[in-house]
Image (tube, rainbow, N blue to C red; front, top):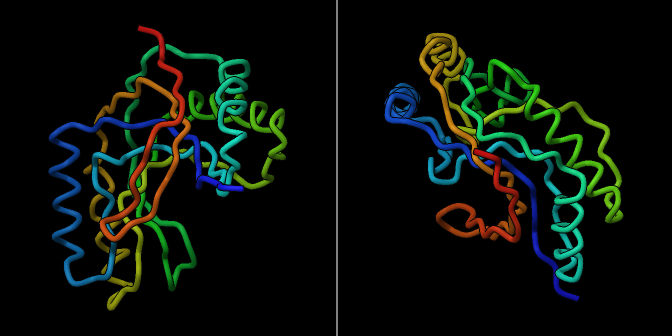
Length: 188
């Protein structure tokens, strides 16, 4: 039985100002082992599913269409950068959103859709965020946090979201490769 590695997310389109702030952050953290996410792969993960039977893909797509209330195309304002993981060993650099209501509503629909397909709801906190990079290791942890703090106002730009996507994720040397398996396009 063949499986796909899957997740459900909302692709995020960023503008030139955001990309300039990203480049500044990368330059300030030069020398640290951080794998920076390609901006063409930016998304907000609503639910990582993991190993998914290929036979279940169609049912998941149908269930998403049944349970997720499709919002209008959305422009959201980004918030401050932060990190996840223990203070001495952060794992992820991210940027949050000023408002999370849209993401929480979408996540609720996604959780209902997946529960209908036999994937129980995961009881863990949800915080909508855009992953900028994955920290492999740090030489100077204090510099890392000073840099994040110094850029608190650097990422507050508006970004566009137009669809929810059920993705297949294939890991590779140049980072993951995402293939849409199904999608729900937001209303105009």
